[in-house]
Image (cartoon, rainbow, N blue to C red; front, side):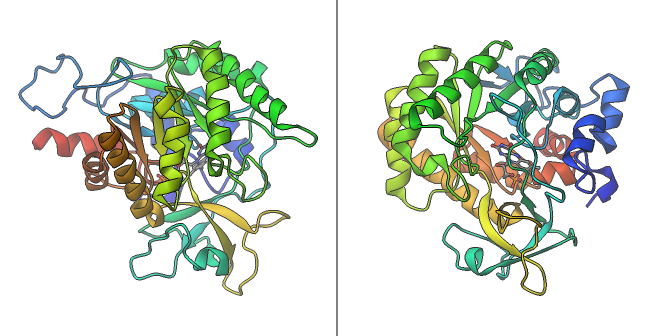
Length: 382
Ligand SMILES: Cc1cc2nc3c(=O)[nH]c(=O)nc-3n(C[C@H](O)[C@H](O)[C@H](O)COP(=O)(O)O)c2cc1C
């Protein structure tokens, strides 16, 4: 494990400090060096000429290595540009909103220690309600909490920055903007749908080639996820698509417990051409407690938090396998972005074999900024 001081998103500083001063560690060095030193196209065939066409594509965009960092830890264009330089070829710009939105109070990240022999957490696991120990002992295999509340700058700030992020992608690299709707007091469903459409339009204005819609943070209030309502996701996706036209839309999902739920999500979205891809999974929500059994994160409404990292790897792989099976059985063509607990080249490979077209790592990459480089090295000697 790298030293905590080398994290590109430093969990010991506030979100605001990270936004203004980050990235840190190796990402900061890559940004200062102003050049990418990760070898390009060392992909599957070691005999290829270095400048041969990339092996992969995402919605027609060539991708050198289908690996990247999902929505969250890349707060602005400095972070996404550094990620590109470190060889993360698909970088997701942190979820933006139609309006400025505050971050939850510090701290936002704690180390999480599930009580299970294999350390895994699945949706419906009783300890998610009974309490999972959280503290500041960051140990491998690493799982963390993620309690930010999806903060956003005002569009006047994030739009020009997102534009910079998009043009900083090198050959074989792609910037994916992430957005979500904002449910505010007094807003009815129609206005909530309209807020998604407005935000998608603001994203499209930046020159985006595709976008990801987050339906898997507590957008609907405490512990309520939009993706638990596939009909509403379908309605929103249809409205968003009528705004963005041919631009591909990915929907970010949480782990869904039953096949019936997942099948219904596909029915309401991809089966109608309203959605061209799914990213899975987002964090799994759990009640976090300190060693005395008290609420671990301070403040009202923060009894539960999203958990990510090693503990959710099996749940992420399971969702990717199930999505892949539905895709094959129904002859659909949606893209699958596999996320959750990826921390090594073998995790990357396992997700690819499960059916992921692109694989991403948030927690793993935060603690190992060389993860994309390591995956390239393993692939080049195969
Ligand atoms: C610091 C941090 C912030 C995150 N913020 C967002 C976000 O704004 N939008 C989103 O869709 N997912 C967000 N996520 C969830 C990740 O995209 C990802 O789905 C989750 O962390 C599982 O991947 P991992 O196990 O590799 O961390 C965040 C994750 C982390 C660690």
